[in-house]
Amino acid sequence: MNINLRPLTFALASLSLAGFSSCANSEPKPAEKPNVVLIMADDMGFSDIGCYGSEIHTPNLDKLAKTGVRFKQFYNAARCCPTRASLMTGLYPHQAGIGHMTNTPNNPTQHNYGHPGYLGYLNQECVTIAEMLKLNGYQTMMTGKWHLGYHGKEKWPLQRGFDKFYGIHAGAANYFIPEPPRGLTLGNDPVEPAEDYYITDAFTDYAIQFMQESEQEDEPFFLYLAYTSPHWPLHALKTDIDKYRGKYLKGWSEIRKSRLGKMKEIGLINTDVELSKQAGPDWESVPEEKRKEMDLRMAIYAAQIDRMDQNIGRVVGYLEKSGKLDNTIILFLSDNGACAEGGMLGGGKKADLESNRGFMLSYGEAWANTSNTPFRYYKHWVHEGGISTPLIVHWPNGIAKEKNGSWIDQYGFLPDIAYSIKEVTSSEYPTEYNGHSIIPLAGQNIFPAISEGKPVHTAPIFWEHEGNCAVRDGDFKLVKRYPGDWELYNVKKDRAESMNLIEKMPEKAELLIAKYNEWAAKSNVIDWKELQEEIHKH
Image (cartoon, rainbow, N blue to C red; front, side, top):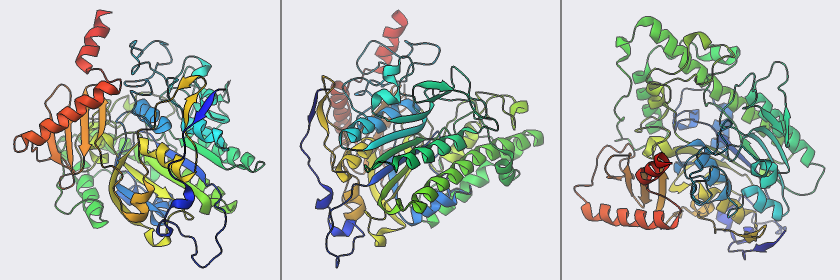
């Protein structure tokens, strides 16, 4: 293997004491490299966990937030696989080869448009976090949803830096009976689900097993735990559903108001922020039987999140019991905003609710609007509702105790995760890997924002997905929903993107448009309309 390494720009020991909980009166000890546990939810909205305003019971995530920190403004890439590409590689999705989507199980060339930024799988000009950390003495393991390449084992986790893998390669699967072509893989081999199977529990079972097996070695570990919860299909266990059955009969309008009130109370959202326009019909106009069905759909969705939180508690419990919790960095986030797929009142048959049947079985746009309180739009789009995610960071040995429970007001985005992991693990990043030149990381380090309140970004950051585009530069965000026009917001003051400033500040808009075009030209981004026309010609 031909590997060249970039010189370190930051070492763990160089962090100020303000950013660590070490005792200043002790003799300094050589810093042990931390373990890293990266946990991602799937299609979960910004306000869907307790510590971000939800009524859904998430005590384990809430405790991590209380004993760690939360970011108010952290961004994903608006869709499952572009987010995973950016998260895993520290690059923009187009730089990693997944500017749109990945190849589907039934079509090995789907979403491969013959351009470097649109291959439908991770290219060879990037390295994953696992590949980077493995070069630097880490054990690497993954459980959950891969969604970064399906056809050809060279695209699978074990061939992209992971020592161990259990999960699915496709973008979604049945929670109770995951079957080919959306079935389970252990290592590189297909496996069958056990009896009384539930996918969220199984991902956690293997995550804990892999961590236990890592105890046989002296090296630290990296665990990537990518849950499919709460992505459709709406599949949950009865004991969890029963906790929420009937709680949503008050309707989406009341739930949105309640969540916004809590978000303001806990300091997440400015007190003058108002709700975006309600997507769903007036609750009282919905027939009673349909209201009961919508209550059940949301109850199942809530149960999926509740079960995920229970399982995160199991992971934390293992780390605590094994004495590893204090020196393990835990990061939790979601891959995109809530999902409005399936229509206003959800997709799939009512008869399939509370069963192990159904695939595109969803809760619909009206509830997705609630999950994304108080923002506009959803997964696919790059307004705040599509790209805003919770980010919880927990690391007792690396975050000063007085920071516990605090909010981080600086904004960041996915490429910052890989860069930050590189920095705090004192890892070197290759310039060449397997004979290929490697693109430099696109992110910055989030830990100075945690320890010292420093901005993560002083230069613009960008998004593009299916022609939906955005630029964040300081307090301002330029954004458009394809095929519409550009809009400009001061998101520091107006996170709900309710006051379009583009006519009042045309020069600012033109400057950001120019910056977007410059970024797109050098980042493998192709104009969506042009790309669609090219695809249709062929």
